[in-house]
Amino acid sequence: MKRALLLAVLAALLVAACGAYTKQDFIAGADAICASTVRQTRSLVPPSFAGSKKQQLAALGAYAGNVVPLVQSEDAHIRALQRPSEDAHSRALLARYLGALRQTVGDYEDLAAAAKRGDAAGVAGAEGELHESPVASLAAGYGLRSCAMPGATVA
Image 1 (cartoon, helix red, strand yellow):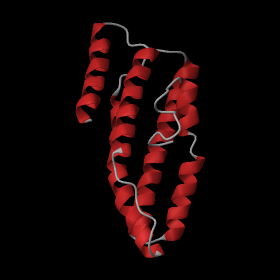
Image 2 (spheres, rainbow, N blue to C red; image 1 turned 120 degrees about the horizontal axis):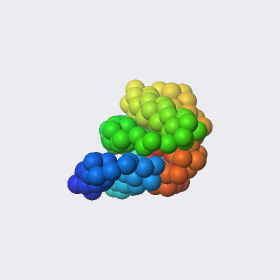
Image 3 (cartoon, helix red, strand yellow; image 1 turned 90 degrees about the vertical axis):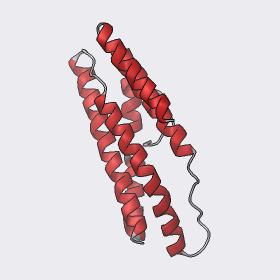
Image 4 (tube, helix red, strand yellow; image 1 turned 30 degrees about the vertical axis):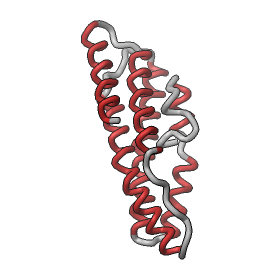
């Protein structure tokens, strides 16, 4: 999985070194990163919601604790991509997407922390923030596909 991500980032860097880096180049690189993160996330064993509330929160905490590094890596790799030269509207939309992505990473961190400490209200709050996040619609608006699909890591 990490190899595919590394290849996608290297391909994007190679394109940038060979000429003008376009919005389509950025989209291809970001979508490859998101697709890799989705595959990694789907390979995790989902939490079991059997047992007491305390056991359910512990299971969610362990699962979310495994997801957090994946979404942090996704965010860092997308931010590392070269920004294309484009119009002000597209630059602003990309900036809004990146801001929403950063916030969503924070929401996953909050979810994991709340679940690990057994804080059901904190879990509910973090889940609410994740459900309200505009990250998927902003990704779609920019032209990203894998980063905007239902079931994507941060959607």
